[in-house]
Image (cartoon, rainbow, N blue to C red):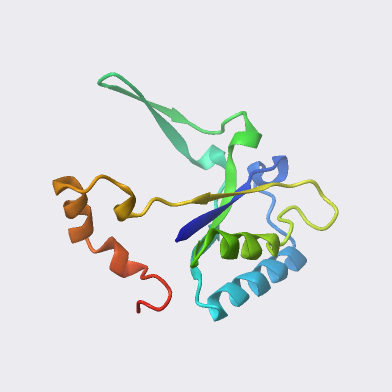
Length: 144
């Protein structure tokens, strides 16, 4: 089971304020623990929305909108992707996630489970995805 730990953006992260050394060290320690446990798949911070864009779809039309985007609470500043055996294990790992805004500050992370190919109705399209070997890029723990 794969889960994404989503770090919500703040005014500071959207302003491009880089984390302090102490926060970087806490995140490094946490991610090292995930790696040692064999559950870390990926993780990184994202640049501010001012350096990104959105594409809106309306029927057959696409509209590109450059950032920044105003609703900071709807934006993400980073993510960590883990693969564990159960929802409970994911919850235990995420309870250990350091406060991304620093000790004593208000912050929020969100955790969402990723779909697996077996979650979908099986058919030709799913077989095409399976043929891309995406599962072999990130095998489940114990399936290496």
